Length: 205
Length: 319
Image (cartoon, rainbow over all chains, first blue to last red):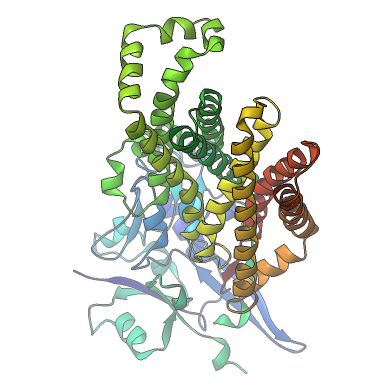
């Protein structure tokens, strides 16, 4: 059984936001509210005076191996597959938002009845959502199960997003993680995330 | 990657969740204290009816706050089923929901024989017919036979609710203010302190009976100890927050630079009532006004604690 993970290289992310658009269309995100997209690219300037770097920082659900969003979920709507993907069963979710409170990565969004109404207008008869619930990145599990990469990875122009299997020693993603070049965010919280980042600042200047 | 952290509070669970936590703790602790008083100190019809009433009404109001904010209200059925505890034993909301439901059930049952003896329910249309129905009479007889069992089932679930309110916040690991062992302790102590204040207020106003003086004195003494314990826990929390994670330091700065927290909660919600009750216990008061004042202050402080706790939780994002 694979153990899926993503590596994001901050050196090659150019902030084109194509990943956001691809994800939104693939997963029918509420595009009318930028706070409700499953993935988001933060744009920040780091440094002082003329020594300033612009950093694009894509964030998404970290598909933790010890996900606090799953343990706090009172209905069992948040579940984890054997392949490591954390997903929400929207039929079980009552939308108490405890998962959003528990997530250290700001990866949970609320899809309300109003969002569904707009979704039906925007996406038309293809709209798949059946009930309001909390939402999150699913690593495009419907694509991954068919052997296709997540939409954000496939569309990334700079190959900043890489998707692979940590249990496969020949997978470049597993190798980058094993080498320590790609590191998890806030590992001290104990969530054991499966999204890793290659730092950009130390390579610059 | 951690050179450019962003620190943010949340606007997901705000004042309304503070009401849920406050009413939950207050209602449950009031029920537990009145039932224990009735079982072991003095059989007290009025206290039990007020305790059960407060437990049911406050918990219902608090739960409505949470229910009103659910995204899919029909899916709440998933968590009302007691079997959820086997599927999700790690989710405190699942435990809390069951504690609340069963506390209400056992609480109403425990109070039922007393309600049947009381005049007021017989004046309420519909209720009079209900409490005189044969099956209700039979249940009342059974409850009297298993008085202590029913009482303890209600008390255990009530204490469960009071503790749960703190455990819920503690289960969010990203926020240092919430994710520490002081929180369940603080919320439990605060729940029982507000319950004592509520009962003192009640026993100095609506059910003012001279024969209950020793109960009032006991409640005052217990409340004094609870307020002192709350101050000690807050002092420990302050020490914990001031050095450690940046999330904790930022929460500390938010709280201890806010007059509402510092003067409103710690000053008027804890220290002033502590002094008033201390004098009452040591020397006594000529009138009931100081204890009534102290009770109102403790009750207000209880809400302020939860309100500020919700607003001062700081997340640290690495972007």
